[in-house]
Length: 575
Ligand SMILES: Cc1ncc(C[n+]2csc(CCOP(=O)(O)OP(=O)(O)O)c2C)c(N)n1
Ligand SMILES: [Mg+2]
Figure 1 (cartoon, rainbow, N blue to C red):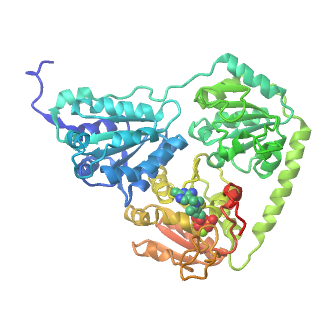
Figure 2 (tube, rainbow, N blue to C red; figure 1 turned 60 degrees about the vertical axis):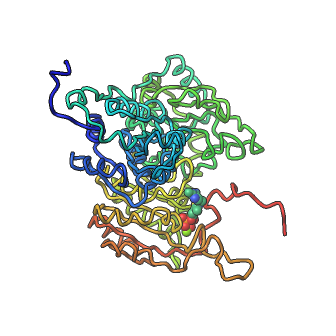
């Protein structure tokens, strides 16, 4: 078409960004308005997108990241320049670390002024700063390039190993006008943005032979397996092979935690005893003690325990990151698991009975011990008696999402609360980061439409607590339960000098977080017994009203750093 023949109608940068996102099926933006992106947010809402405004960009970023995990589509976080961008950056880096697809879109100031460092309003070379913290970073200077910019950002976020992408949109881009028809033509609807990666047949064969040779096999399911949405095939692989499995935290519920092949309650037995371990979308990072050391039966922290590993991962660089991987299986998890299933056929021999019996014996013993602990009703309430309630509530409401952060509040919840459906447990992930709570809760409610239960340490909650206003503003069915033990890990530390400041881990005693929720029109509950906790949680689920329950927990009940006390460096100086 010649210039003369073009329509009189014009479009601009604002509309092209929105049109490009919508064209690619993206219908929600999590963000925080201000110069230069306020009108982008307004126009996106006017164009029918869901625009969820937060009180701090980190929470909007965490919302985008977990929306990406839940949907396999990049979650969008929209921020202003410099400080807003920096506030969003922690979430972007966390998303990349956790392989959650998200795009942080930040407005930025004029390139000329930034590049000459002339001191603009919120001036910062954002692209350069974002680069080392994300999978890819792009900048669009001309409205005609918006289609390409968004397409590249989407592909980078979801293809291969997913992650965070930064997209820099300078203020001057938005009002640039373009002929409407030319603008439309410049947009790209991405075709097959996360292409399947079929594993090589010889790699499949190698993995099957190793698995077949095992006397004490074990399958480890990571959150990559949960992300893959290959739920039925993964379940079939576990059940057809009869191999016991352990879910990593965010893979809980991929198979119901009550599944008879789950070895979670015998974790400390199966890890050192297994001879062949198949990792499915799980990395051998610190959460698995790097695949070596005492956890795995090695004598010293760096010693290999003697296990052979099959590792299914989309990244060819993952294998051998910590210990030797004898059978790397590179491809997308769905394709790899499906190829294994084909190879397994109908007559696969189940693991030796003595291995299964030994696991069952430990598991039953530990489950019985746990049941005994959970049945107690101490005063004040402790983590166990409170979590016995949460466990029942999730059992009765398996479609609810469970968001979880804290130290003891995290570790006890993970081990006590069974999950029944995939991608319902959303937590601190690879970094063990605090601050995901309310961002994840908002996104989980918006994306799933299901009730959300957030089990929060009182310290953990503080990182994103102001977003209870956001929860009330959008009237989301979120029930926040704060395990209030007056501090970080415990509320009992004292200042050794006897001075007026409290210890660094201690908060205001007896704080009433429930009042915070009431300030914005939500339901606040002060619960000191399991019965009160149960009643208020049931009511929150039933009513779908924004609710915050201040659950008072024995301040002496926790341990330093929860389960990871051993990672604390110890002072060499004794006195
Ligand atoms: C961003 C960030 N800052 C600090 C920490 C260190 N940290 C780990 S757990 C935790 C809070 C633990 O206290 P709480 O949430 O009250 O849980 P509790 O053990 O008391 O149940 C902190 C501050 C972290 N993981 N992430
Ligand atoms: Mg606490």
